Image 1 (tube, rainbow, N blue to C red):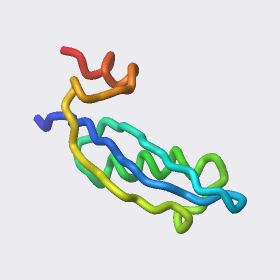
Image 2 (image 1 turned 180 degrees about the vertical axis):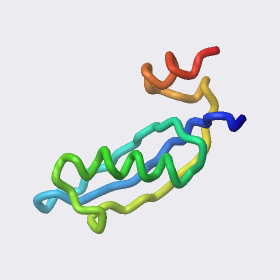
Image 3 (image 1 turned 120 degrees about the vertical axis):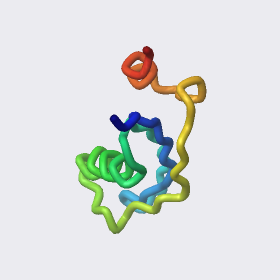
Image 4 (image 1 turned 90 degrees about the horizontal axis):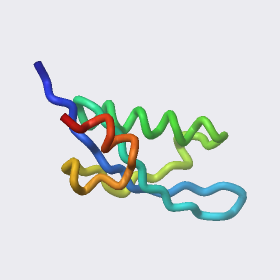
Length: 76
């Protein structure tokens, strides 16, 4: 059985001539799945995928996670 990992995705997007920075954390089996989940969350607010620039994707530990929900779901 595969282990679920935690990924932190950092990037930015432009909306109405302003640049916004985002930092999202997602639980997924693969890096591609985490990226897809984060992109779907951001595009739900009316942003096109071509407007999003991903700067960094990295796997983090449970202790590094800042998202309360991810911490609660990942505890053993």
